[in-house]
Length: 626
Image 1: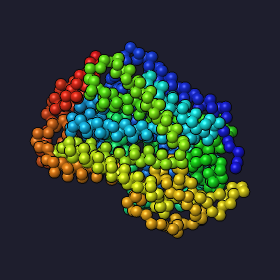
Image 2 (image 1 turned 90 degrees about the vertical axis):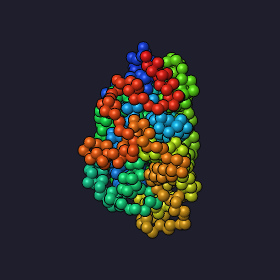
Image 3 (image 1 turned 180 degrees about the vertical axis):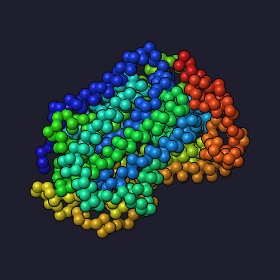
């Protein structure tokens, strides 16, 4: 056991300064908008936010501590194939700009799930919103736990104290300042994340002798596996898993998740919302690339002495923070800046989640039952809901700290199993006008249960190490360490691995992966978790269409065109092609097409066939805004 390295005074001051500034933004906007405390301002910033800060906010909402800390760990363990993660937001952004942003602005939705009630039935809205609330709460709990674990590794602070600190700060500035506080804090935190991550990358590369030595170390260990296009779905991650499965996951977030839809609606026009979506791609690409490269640098730094096996750290997700402490030992404040970057990723994700979940609870569950609530009471409910959510995610984070990965794996399994089917039900609504409420309801239920079944089966059965393709690590350069054999806690403790129930596998450091004995496993449960979203998407679409056919398809000629988005509807295509892809749905009137995206136009321009609950909630929200 070696002596641990902890934060210095400068590191602590830098870290605390970032937290204080984050809280200050929330308090500032609470004071600034104290005379305009309306639900519209609290959740949508009066729909007049600038595209650039919104784009930064969208970007860091995608980037949590899972990116800043988890992605380098993935690179350290599984190789440079993780670089494909940088490209996963491009296609989802294109889809969002072409189809979802115009629809969301056209309908002026209170929450994204209100669309499902307009298109199908209230039960579809309740089911989808309920699933998303559950999965987001669980996900945010694990997101708080990850940087708390890192902080406990580099400071005398315990993990539980770090959890209270993280969740407390998120809850305070989110509840106080609403969406404006969240967005502007996100913009500030994106700068911290960039500076902290780039500093760790450059300093680490200099310490190991330059990027040439980093790539040489990656090649020596077989970690330069970027162009691995293996079609076997059982392999944990390849270029193909990122370009298909992970892209599907991000498509769900970019197109039909409440935190992102809320930001689209905070823009005044469709054009501004599209600009915000495109802006988000740039920092996401840069920060993700830096995180992956940090993982490569960390491997080069610890190539001869893995800190986990040398008992310098407790879990693999502490590898990068520990390296940062060592390389910045003589530079006061820089290690604190990096941990602040990881914390910023968590603060941005959790604050966005708390704000959006509060909006969902109010608009999807409370207002439909109590549509005549006053503005003051709605604001009270929103803030109380935010505090309660903060307490719940604190408890979940604490539970995560008591396990070796089982609860974390289960939580991330729930999140991954629900995303694909969620995207599937929106796909049925937008692009399949003949699909009815029963098709959407049964399709989503079957898709979610099927994915969850596979995921739980994988957790129970465990992973075959042969398909995980874990890269070798060495303890040859460590003092007084027997490097003949090693156990692989990397397979059990990593909070990024959703399927980590494999008992300790013992194998020779120098052994090739292909020589490791592969035991008998059920192949269905060996499918990589990265494909779960894509599987759920296609199962939902197929089952939804079949059930709609059995129960009676909708008459497409009677469909409201405002609820439908043709796959191809650009004027550059021939009229007969565009007519075909409308599938019989009448075209939008010219007057509606002109007004589409104009946030100054009222709901009367679009006479939707709304349910009584939707009408009452809209009237209540209009009264509150006035």
